[in-house]
Image (cartoon, rainbow, N blue to C red; front, side, top):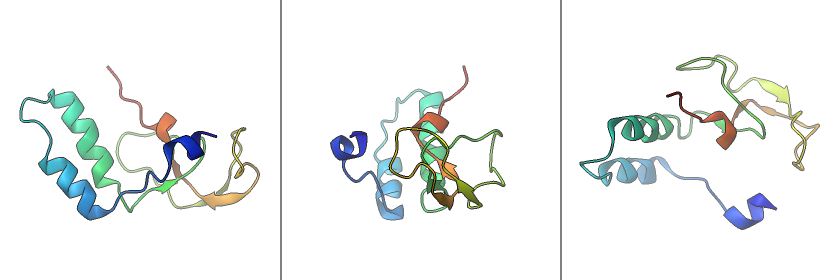
Length: 93
């Protein structure tokens, strides 16, 4: 249901670069860092239902074939290249 409401959330490298260029000059540095980090991962990290990183920086598990175990998705039980979903993109304060 969430995927239906959100539509296609895929962005291109060009869109990511434009998003970065259009960030407000007075944006809080921590918020800017989150957006910049997310944009650097475009095209490099797959979407994976329930995917979370256990490390700061590059996670060597990304791209490895893994079973989706988080409940609530039509992909649960299938094998996909490991990556992140929105729950894996939290920041620490």
